Amino acid sequence: MPNLPLSYRVVGQDDYMLEISVQTTGAYRVNGGDYTSHEPRGGTLSPPQMVRLLSLADRLGPAREHPGPEGATGFMAELTVGEGETARRFRFWEGALDEEPDLAALVRALEVI
Image (spheres, rainbow, N blue to C red):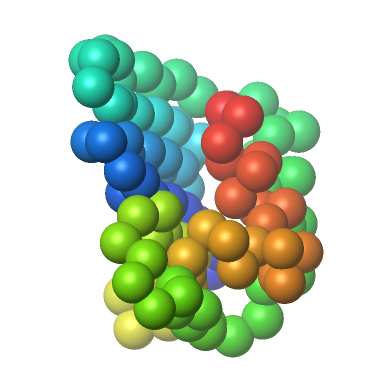
């Protein structure tokens, strides 16, 4: 499966961060935090969830970057689709998701795992 594994990481403000990974087996791990501590959680995606994520990843096209506006220090994200030499890396400021509906759809699907 060339669209797996998936790895998403965003660093916000006030110590906020979110990391989500999905392995080729469907195993996932979500690690998020802010000024309060949250225990990482994990599990295994259902077959319909896997199909949805793969379908959304298929629509992304080539890797690209969307830097934040000048002076922006928070809510910078990186999404990696696949692994090794064929991995596609998307680096972007979360505000750019308004301009990238396909990227936004996959990010939102990951965030609700």
